[in-house]
Image (tube, rainbow over the protein chains, first blue to last red):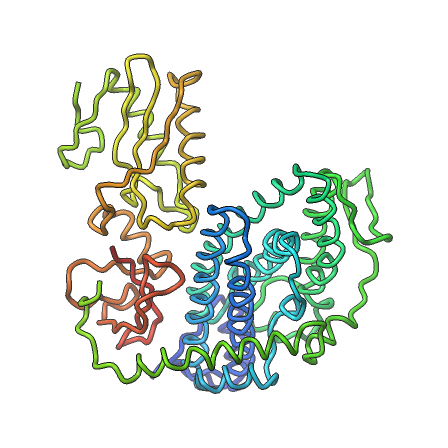
Length: 311
Length: 171
């Protein structure tokens, strides 16, 4: 058995000192539940994102990008797998319970996966803008995360997401330097995905946010969001695209870019499983789970393999 | 002139007219990190197979992939080309970077340094031979959970002692 703390104050002092909590520690229940819910949502998002990515394998233009989408699908599903294992180890829900709750619409996943990717331009916007937003929030967690098993998995996930970002950047530049038709398609995608990507960071962090107090997150939502706008608004404008925010302000003196007011209603709808594509997405994921049941059964009933026999 | 340029004692022959230039090229390549493992160079990963500097000054680099469907091949080749082109004495010459179809990459090509960084920085173990794979965190035995993880070159294991979720690189 791991360490115990006499009180919440003692536990918080341990966290403030940079202490790292391990799975066998006797952590306070509230902390356990908060960390678990956070990892469960991350795992769900990797799974839902991986399934979206999978839909694009046959439709991706060119062999090289098709290979990349294939590998990215495996990456996302693999990340989901690792995260579900880490979450299950916390003892709040089993992996089966997490999957069942996801398909029953009882647990959350990222807002961006409640929308439908209709064109290749949408996929480019996702791999360039949305992945960058997701990566920025993961980095902010990783930097100072007090839960050891999650922190160590995040290090690997972030390295791989960084690679996806480079692929996304390459795709965006290809389309930006492409034909008028391609540029028009990407502008439409930018109009559709700019706000969901911004909303992914969530509303301004509350002063009493336990995720910040317990060193699960290390940066406030609004800080991450502002940094993302600061990076992507001028970049997209330099490529000749229009940011779909009439109130976007550029201060030439300080060279800062500030987004206009954000409508949080679309985010709230996705959290209530009422986004534009929520129902179809969840049904699709559940159907995929049912279709692959025979694989899991075969794995469960197969005689135990000798280590290394299939290496 | 043939020299053991890789410094790996493998006996691979490398045609070279300028030993120092070859050294500088190799040093430049050692600064190129794997896109999915920041901090681990492609030389330590064992991807570098050959460096040839031809009499006309053109440079040919031979690399081997960890697996042929790896999506990072173009990116790695671009990074290598950029690093080599910047080497003193290469400027203006053609740099040809090629992915070879043989020899096959194996985990034995990883340097001790790469294995150490994988274990300490990424909690990734390397399967050598057929015995149990030790946990990079506590040294305990791990058990295979899935043949494949986020990449085709890695399996997913769980440590029997500390329950750590471990990725295992294998050929």
